Length: 350
Image (cartoon, rainbow, N blue to C red; front, side, top):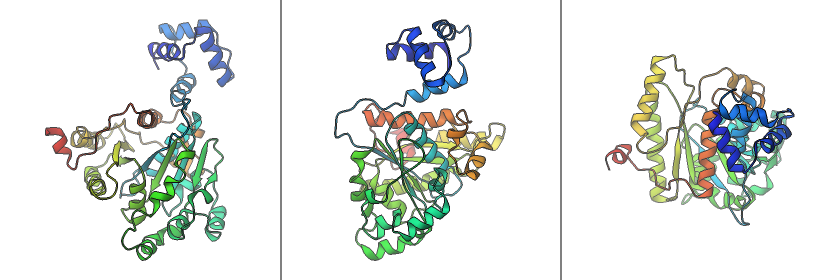
């Protein structure tokens, strides 16, 4: 963070340098004074990393809003596994919740990785599955979504847990409602939108009926795409699916953007893949800054923790802040409202 950016944030809040120092101290336990703020703003000293992160996250804070405002819902989806869907879902959800927003994380993957990442152990998942308290029961057994929502250990973040039984839900959905098996979740999710600011759904690595239910129920899609050869083809496939959904069942659905993941700037193929993504889709939708490849993500996953909760300045923080900020602009009505075109080339030449 530059001194000019710090000054802009301070002035946006209407604070003097002394008041800004007090605000920072209250949240960090430090003892900065107005002279320190002045040195940061003039560039005489660099803003410390922890203060920069604090200020960046504070920009995600929930504003005072009129009653009745409903959540913006986003799916994190791509039909390919290993692209960072779960990591992206939980870290964006964590940033929004940390800033004081009410967030609901929907685990729509039978692997239950998002459920585990936010602190639910496997024994609890099994118990909830046996007790009819997972997403499967909402989709297949007509249980109200509100009945299965559970708190997490993260303030402001609630969870719709998943279980392995969700793997069999596609067949059950087809038999329950052969005429509309991909829209069952729409009303269920709609019933809790007023209770949250943001709803983020972590989708399975397929385009089955559970994923289609999620896509029909949300406003936006974030597409995490690993920077690897031929990655662009996976994006094209889900974009075709989104276009069909727009034309048939959810015309308001839009793509928030593409999030390149597992990027290694030292590898020629990663740089080439990132350039392919930007050239192929940059004219049609936003391409966020890439999330670097880093060992902190698998380490946090192995410990069943949210990466940014244990490593606040993890590589990729800036990218996840970009996504969270884009969601906030969607909710406050300052984001572009153009629909995703069926063909990126049409957007580039239209």
